[in-house]
Amino acid sequence: MVDILNLTLPELEAWMQSLGEPRFRAVQVWQWLWQRMARDFEDMSNVSKKCRALLAQEARILWPEVSRVQESADGTTKFLLRLEDGALVETVLIPSDSREGVRRWTQCLSSQVGCAMGCTFCATGSMGFERNMSMGEILGQVLVARAHLCDVRPDWPILRNLVFMGMGEPLLNLSEVMRALQSLNNDKGLNFSPRRITVSTCGIQKGLKDLGESGLAYLAVSLHAPSQDIRARIMPRAARWHLDDLLAALKAYPLKTRERITFEYLLLGGINDQPEHAEALARLVGAVKGKLNLIVYNNTPGSPYQAPGEADVLAFEQILWKRHITAIIRKSKGSDINAACGQLKAANSI
Image (tube, rainbow, N blue to C red):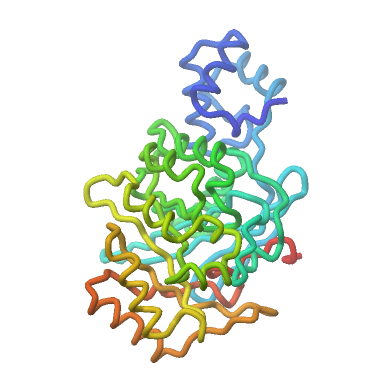
């Protein structure tokens, strides 16, 4: 049977036409799946009974199973999801309040079960790599989150931003991530603007150009080091693409008007958080149209790293400002439930 959530709209149109259904019927079904979040073909009331029966015979609507939901003291919500084959992934909802006092949410999406990159500061990296996630599994995380917001917080249902910053390296699952982005951008379905979607990579040469030329999402780069030596020590696999070559590629990366590349820089106490590191970082990224998110390391059991002191963090930020680098200290949320940056590790969650 076909996992209907794993079909893009053009694929759904072609498949339904192969069943003898008109093309417009696929649009109706697509809207039921992604706008009304139908979980049963019988709920699709404007679809003919004959078509509903045919769909029930030939296809499934396969949402991830919610195994556990944890809520942080700051409102961050983490979901442990079980996929059809039993694989476990995590996705996180992060709250923020707008100037109008309306609560909005950002969802951190996973794209792989585990991760092959093995960054030494990342809990997901210690899991190793199991497999890529399908488009349906990636987008199923959004359905789960939206259903949760409607059920649990009916006054705050606005899922505003999506960030591919959960488990896995998105550019190592490029085909399925691109299919997911195409579906997210479709105005007949989830209808997310590209400026509301960010894809984060630790620096994978293959696929970077394709992502930029697609215009389907903004780019974030997990930099975390001001030199090739430090990057090779803390991100050994990502560092196989030399830092100089990565920066050269980013200088040529296609950007829309007012779009900038976001650099993520995790501050590790005594490793990359000293004034000389800030000076080197300013020189490194100064020629790229971008901005820096500074992230204070979230302590993880068994990790060799520790968070830097507050004075070191503020001094680091000040040096960047003086060098005219746009940099902000990003407040971590959800650390009390291991939902903050670098803490996702679904395999040991239950």
